[in-house]
Length: 198
Length: 198
DNA sequence: AATAAAAGAGAACAAAATGTTCGTTATCAA
DNA sequence: TTGATAACGAACATTTTGTTCTCTTTTATT
Image (cartoon, rainbow over all chains, first blue to last red):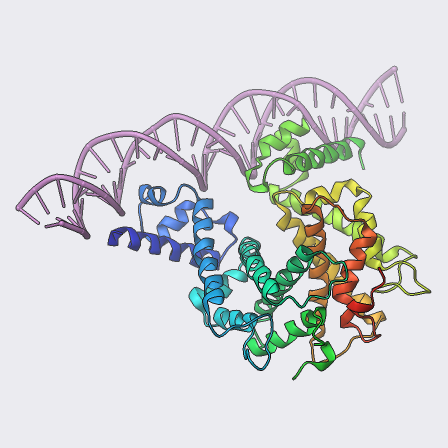
């Protein structure tokens, strides 16, 4: 790809994210974006059809990468840790999020966070589903599988939101413990809230 | 209040909600609202400062009422049922939602559902907090109280969203069972997913 | 029934934002 | 070096917003 294209694209993304940290998505105009990015109006519309299109492409870039890292990572094994698998997928995700990866947490706490959270949850659903399939330890009390998937990924996303709203006072390991405390009891291997290691 | 005012207000709300079921909030113009409501432009701005203001007032009317009904209802007792309290708060809420109360479920599944879900969750947080206070059976495994409140109300809201997206195939009682199955184990009274009555 | 006050209708308006077109200039890859 | 491509910038029609004005209808009160 032409260097100029990539440069312009990056400048627009950067300006857009900077604006998102200041004001809600709906209040941001194309004019503001191109002023901040220092590109021409024509250039913007050559890259993105609309402002919505820009937002969509940003989401895809961010969450495609973050979930991809969790799936590919060889250190993660299953929903939560045991002797053979020292690190849960979720703990890995939390660490990855905290390592300021393109400041994804900033976007999750911005005024337009709903948009990003929706993308985040949709991305997570696939991950959770595959984890449930490989760790088929569910206590089937006639609870639908997709209800559980939705419950688990929603809980994770909402926990991350709670975390960033509260200025990230906890470490990823602590958060992982909270998460296992509320999600762990749903599995049949005896893990219980009262037996969580602290 | 003058009948004309109430009539106009209702017409605008009604038109707005009808439009929300067709297209996302951001694509709805004031012109469309006043055309559908059959009121003049001046009239709209006499009632609402902006389109955002209209949305806010609609949310307040809807969720203020729905949560108020849960708090006031004498048949609800605590987070989940026992012999002396045949109906949980959440089951009552679900029934109330299903009784097509101003079609609140339609709004929770519309293209702009994020907005309503946020209001819904914020309203619920207060309710959950009061319930936790009166039923102080939490297993305190050094898990912050506000984390749990967030987890519970988020789980409820996300369950409702999952429900309406799946065309409401379950009854409120079934949903209540699902909810207690994933939330119940967090309490110290011995209720466990494997002991849930089916 | 008469009347003053309040509410709405309808047209017109400026301002802001959108998305497009065109000719020109700068930069890239070969 | 040179043809191709990307960006610039100015101008433009269009849409949406929010306001202002005059005129008409409805309401509550006497």
